[in-house]
Length: 170
Image (tube, rainbow, N blue to C red; front, side, top):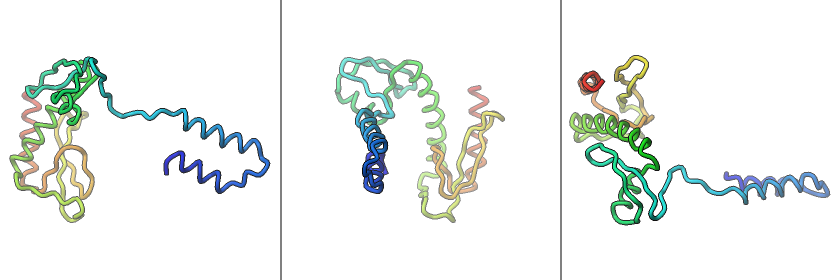
C-alpha cells in the first residue's frame, strides 16, 4: 500500500471528531506527500547534456544526448552514466558479468532454468573477495545476477576457468 492510500485508510479508520491536533497531523502528512517529488533510480540526461557509456569494445565513450537511436538504445539497455568514473566502474562489472554469461552459454547452450521447480538445482557462481576466488552456491529459487548452471558437471570447469582468468587479469 502506497503512502497516499495508507493515509486515506487512516483518515477513514480514525474518527476525527473535534480532535484538531490529529486533523492537523493528517493534513501535514498529506502536504508532505504532495511536496514529495517522484525520483528515479536511474539518471537520464537531458537534451544536449553529456553522458558516458561503455562501448562494445569495453572502453568508455562520451556522447551528448540528442534523443537519437543510439541514445535511446543505450538508455533502453541501461548503459548511460553521468560521469566517466561511473562508466569506468560499470565497464569492469560488465566485463566480469559477460565473462560468466559467455561461459555459461557455452557450457549449457540449451539450458532451461525453471525457477518454479524447487527440485531443479541451480548452481550460482560468485566472486569471493575475501579469498580472491570464484566459488559456487546451490539454490533452488534465488537469483544472484549471474546466470546459473543447471548441470553439476559444468560447475567445476566453470570455476576453474574463472579462477584462471582472475589470475591472468590480476
